[in-house]
Length: 242
Image (tube, rainbow, N blue to C red; front, side, top):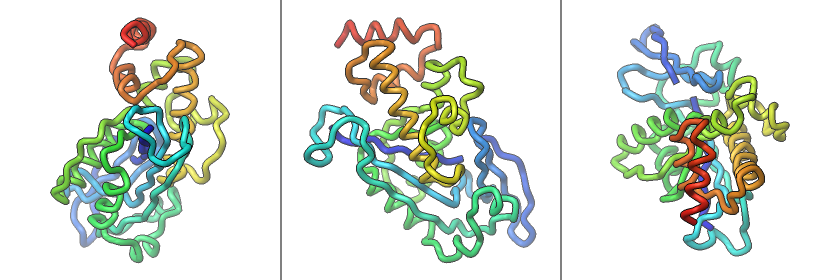
């Protein structure tokens, strides 16, 4: 049962002029309220923090370590990264990430190379994964490294499974499901741990509500592409083919 990787980072951008540094953007995730300052001329941006969790998942390729079962977190990766731009005061207050912290952090290329080694070929899960995947692909492309990991999205899955949630932001879903607190929101490792807990809840609900004995990554990716009304039929087709 190899592991899944969980990550969370910040969707849409608005322009900002940084004195002495040229145009940049504030990137805001529509699925959550996290923001990151990014240089516009770099294409896809570098968020100032990365956090990943390695999960023991029910995939058939052999165990990560002896004795791991189910959705247990088995490893973590977290690092600040220095993207070469200054963080404005409101982002410092919002995230708790200061320019002093970033100044002492390793360069983005080093952090992304380490994160890619941590991930390997394992499947990944994120909240609003299409956005995180764009960052992941862009950063690894800069390093000349392949990025073939399949992404599942807890945001898309939650919209289909929990239509009565007040909204589908990560923090709101954590409160809706009474998930344990993982620390300060909008810090990557805390968000990754919350997303991991949400994945566990999703997998439990697929087992209990729909009779899916082993909700594997491939099924999650299939369900996130169907409409909410088509979800039961997609699950029945999966069970019939199993």
